[in-house]
Image (cartoon, rainbow, N blue to C red):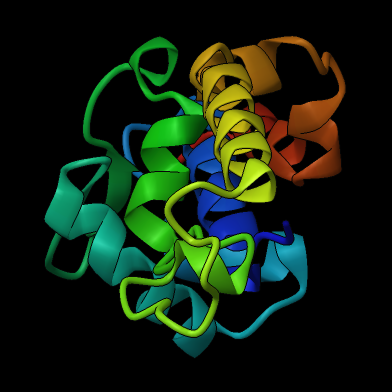
Length: 152
């Protein structure tokens, strides 16, 4: 199974917000930190805000922030919001009628068990876990310099 770029950057957005000491994070700063376009990040923000994982504050001094504590946002929460399909094989699809074994296949059962284990592991990690386990994350994201400079 391969996660999409959308999921990858959704996790990165949440990590940035969790690492940022400022009340709001700006999309431009996040885009710069990860060397991606703001437009791409805005597209990813839509499902994150709709699900409540991120809150958006409009206006000149607006930005985004986590919708709940980083410790209460699991990787599974993010994956469920950003991934469209968890079909690991054709037989996972709703219209899988081509295979005569679809209802009693050992492969299907094994893949479902593997997917369940994958979800269980993702549920065991929070955004906070990802940020707190990396002491240099603020420096790597360019946040350390900003927090040292007083706001005007």
